[in-house]
Image (cartoon, rainbow over all chains, first blue to last red; front, side, top):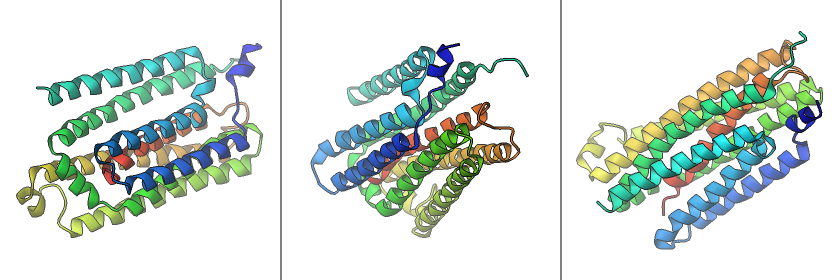
Length: 96
Length: 198
């Protein structure tokens, strides 16, 4: 069962702490940026930072980076479905 | 107990459930996007009335608790039961602090006559009514998830304490952790969308 060792990957305290520090810094950045008024660009910047933070949580805290292909593919399919749901609904509303 | 534990299967089951949760909140964010497009100025005005500081503190609390939950899994796998228990306990307390903050935040809004069906919202601009409607539904649903996550953490705490979860068998703790991280993920989007709009 050599495959088991790769499946049972374990995050070290140090790795987890580094992820936490990056997340806290990004939170500071997103709050700081919100005070700078850039008109409509504030929204994509805030969402961009949020997406980056979410990726960090998913990859390391939820150890998606080390999961089997079944979980990775099904997760990406869910995100794909969500993107279709949000973008098509929004296009309909925006260009009706 | 010679049966091997199917770690991938257990986790895949949890992930399938998490996908349905992601779609549930995705639907909420679609509503947000559509109405933000319709009433941009009212949404900005509404967002200004929310307390950024409380929002930021709650973000930090959830991120910190996510870290401690992840670290508790590492701890139990390295065999340090005591450390794992205190990390789970700390995460649970973070959940309580989050809810207390939410209580004061909602309380302040109620005090200013901003709640579903209140005079101010009904007679005010329609966009603000929708903004605060979405605010209460989404943060309320999220708060419910915090309570569910805390329940799962409490169950895991008891199971670790009674040696039902140990270095060889920790799927329950891992799945509770996944749920707790999901709660965190949703908040990472809720925070900029409601508290930091423009």
